Length: 135
Image 1 (cartoon, rainbow, N blue to C red):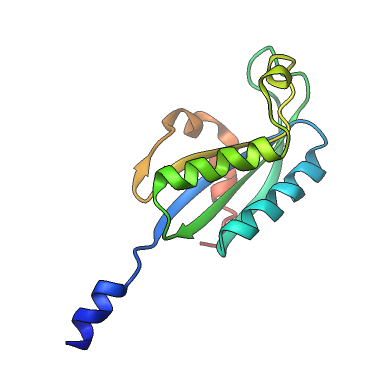
Image 2 (cartoon, one colour):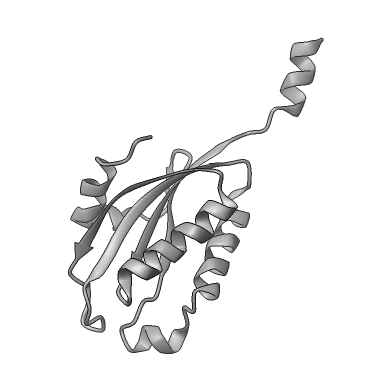
């Protein structure tokens, strides 16, 4: 009976991989992003960070990239909503993007065992940063 009750009340923990990038005031924006993420997700770990050249022609400045692994009982839609809210709170907007400025970009790359953004894995820094994760 107790095991049945424990199963009913057990929360399902989802595991997600986030890709974080910024090309403006990089160290400060990455640090601020950590503060936002740490306030929302209590079980989170970060990879090393890596400076990368921009993809495409619109971006002028190099990016500072990092990965994070989160464990959460929230569903995927709520996590995406929270990530977009962080981006907005940090000042991300369409006008900056048109000018090649990315204050912060937080992408949900993997949700549990599903790769959501396979194109991200073509970027060499993803594989390099995955190796530095603790979890």
